[in-house]
Image 1: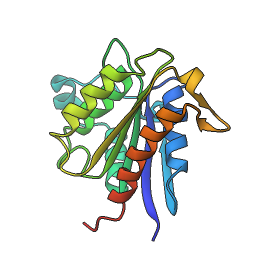
Image 2: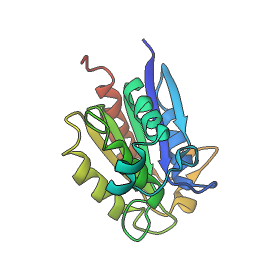
Image 3: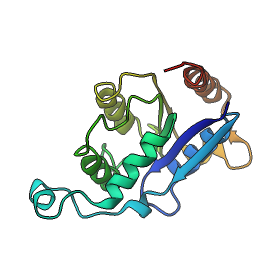
Image 4: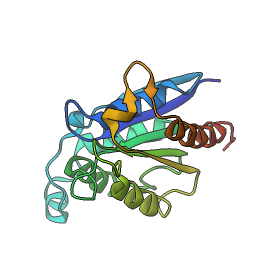
Length: 182
C-alpha cells in the first residue's frame, strides 16, 4: 500500500533549510508517494475578515486544502521568525482555517524545525506542537534539529548520533501512525 505524504518547509525562502529537512524526512518513508509543496506557489493577500467578505477565499487556499485532504500523512518543518511561524505559513493557515472542516483533517503529522542556531527553531516548534494538538486529533510527533549546518549534510542527513537517535524514535512513531487504519 502506498502512503500519500504531503511535505513542505513552512518557509518561503528559496534556499530554506527547513525545506531540506522536510525532503529528507519524506525520503525516509518507504512506499510513499510524496507531494512536496513550495509555499511560494501559495502566495495570497494577507488574510483579513474584510478581504474575505469582499473577495471570498482565494483559489490558492482551496488548492492548499485539497492537498491536505488528498494526503494520508503530513510532514512540516517550520522556519522560525522572531519565535513564531513565518508570515507566509501563517497567512496560508489563516486562509485555510476559513474553509470547512479541520485545517489538518486529523491526519498524522510529523512537525519539525531547524535553524543555524543552537535552539533549532524550538520556539516555533513548541508553538506548533501546542496549538496543533487542539486542531488535530491524530498522532503528532515532533523533532528539533539545532545547528543545522553542523548537524546535517545533504549526502548523509542528520550527522550527530544523539540527534539521529532522537529523530529515529520520532520517525518510527510517525511511521507506526502510517499503519493505523482510519
